[in-house]
Length: 587
Image 1 (cartoon, rainbow, N blue to C red):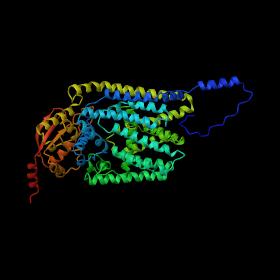
Image 2: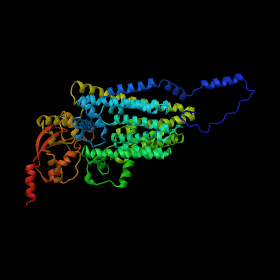
Image 3: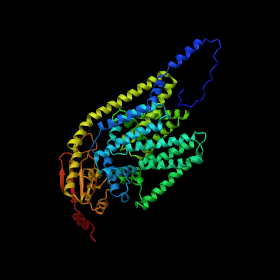
Image 4: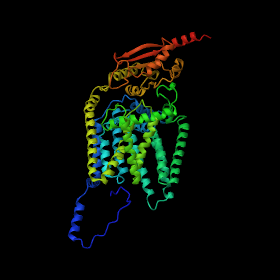
């Protein structure tokens, strides 16, 4: 019986006959001692050499991250958005507050930028450090709490995972968030350990439960959906029959969140928070066309189920190396995977494996919040990738449990691990072959090398604007302002992320208020991997067309970069607009 299982129903052993031959008894004991199972042998080996293995895994993650390094800014915008936000904090910490998503990561970046400046390579390299630290603290959190035969295979597969290695060189929140999750779980588990001690008392551990509430707050400002961690913590403490402790933890969070909002109001002079921007988008039927109205309750339920299929049957199996990222949804595969997670969680519950059970509740709860809050049009693999080590813990425990019951199944465990290892390694080496030459070219030659033509034209237009209007780039409206910020070497542009209305005058109001005189119309691909004529992100064009329908000569052509997948700059003719408005609305 494993030491990680509760010792229930251990059968009593019949006393041996006094007539048994002494030599036979010795022989039987010798055979039993020598006949160690695969699990026992591996567990003993991994435990005895655990320091060497965690050093090796961390080193592998570090090396593979550099071999997969991408020195370009991600075209998905968030990469540059966080750098721009960090630069704003570094410039005027109490005069700026980031509300697009959770603010903690840009705040951390601001300290790096304050010291290093906006050095793209160094800022990206910080994500590698976060990734390696995250792996180490996951090891620290789970060591001696789960079998090493589960812990180290999961960490190794995470360390060489192609998608994780991509985000290890992007200034996205993923590796930073994983590090914060690992640190939080480490502290959670240390507190949970105290609950089982004979000398445990609430009075002597009161401060620990206040700190649990504080940690939940830190997780929330690290990642919006991590607000669900508070609910998971409270449910878990109630399950452990620690009712007062759950109230203290929740109360601590509420008090800290109240103080946080007071600080936003009186120090940063904000009435908004990190949830204001995304919270409004979350309940819209369409994230980029709010005029379509709010989503209904039944619509949110449908969204949740569709996201389950997108992220579980498609994105998760892409991350594991078995399917393409945009592969069609598969209901059977979704239900099968959910069934594995639920059954494994039940076995953890029955065996009182609190660390594994809490980590399963943790990733399942945060994923549930993700599936409800995010629009199905987003479908980004990174949003489930971040929970990969905890998902692997869950799956490996199911195989481990039955492997202990039936020794022949221990070979199945090894086969599954090696299939995952080979699949991950294959995807990773393919990625290295693609990215390493681009990285070398970016460092030694053309920084735009590796971008598709649509983005090359966007970047060229940004650089042209920065040269022609060095002190006036804020008067230029663009689709990807953070990207323009990076490629103009820190100049601000006016962002347009959606088309809130079809009314021309309403669309012009924010442009006039912000003194926007130009608008850039790029033809950025809908599908980044393929050029399809006439299909591009239409936010800027739609914005301009609604204005042009009422004011036909509202825009004057200024400049163009590229012929195919071009980027164009137009000046807004306010004089013409005002004259036509006066003619249409005579006093």
